[in-house]
Amino acid sequence: MKFLSTLSVFAAPIAALHASARSPTNATEPIITTKVTPSYWRATFANPPFNIEDNAWFASFFALVNKITHDPDVKVVVFDSSAPDFFMAHFDIINPVKQEYLDTYWGNITLLANSPVLTIAAVQGIARGGGAELVAALDVQFASKEKAKFGQIEVGFGQLPGGGGMSLLPRLVGRSRALEIILGSEDFDADTAAEYGWINRAIPDAEFEEFVDSYARRVSSFDKVALSEAKRIVNKRSSYPTAEEQKEDWNAFLGTLRQPHVQARTGKAIELGLQKDLDFELNIDQEMMKLVGKGPWNV
Ligand SMILES: *[C@@H]1O[C@H](CO)[C@@H](O)[C@H](O)[C@H]1NC(C)=O
Image (tube, rainbow, N blue to C red):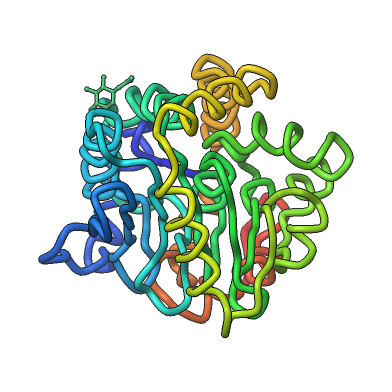
């Protein structure tokens, strides 16, 4: 998870330099909500090619959390993506994300985790950085064996997974595997992620949609009182990270980001194709190896 936004002194020039590289303004909402039935909703990330978590995404996400937590009928929400390669690439690195959105994210993501509604990540593409953290923050994770990939790539850029990953991963996969994932900054396929407990299970892509849809329909047919009480007690027994813990991680991330060489490296990565070029984004865990050290980087 990376934002240059909070560091306006650095973010402004980077944003100006790369203004032409902004993702095209999407005429539609970045998250499209479909009520399959009153109790089973799909929330589809629809800002191709990368599904960047940008200002528009945050506004849409908060509105969705508000709808989910106030609707008496909804029991299950499946989060998926209409972009072919990405579930969600990462947070917006180029265009400043509003401080008010950063301030209210932790409360909203924790509210969702503690809501009576079951959230399911249905991942058929790449989820890295803030995208991987969002997947981990949802209740249940299903992923396509062939198409899904997960990565906390921040340390490779001299930063930290500040979007909840450092609090969530040790609880999901244990200390040693969390260290392997976070310090290695590498991609993981769905089978390995499932073996580690990062996700619930990996499913062959040909069976994926049917599997997710039948699970969501089955759960959404059950009584809301039983579902919400089950989730409440399981949450109580399993110590989901608090908003305060996640904020502490975020502040540690900001500390790494403030270093001038990290700013320079991020600027260079943008120049090389970060958040712009499909090949760079697809192979980011390899591309980052060109930018190790304090620079200058001759690439
Ligand atoms: C969720 O986000 C909205 C919009 O930014 C904000 O008004 C609200 O207070 C947030 N909720 C929590 C629980 O933090």
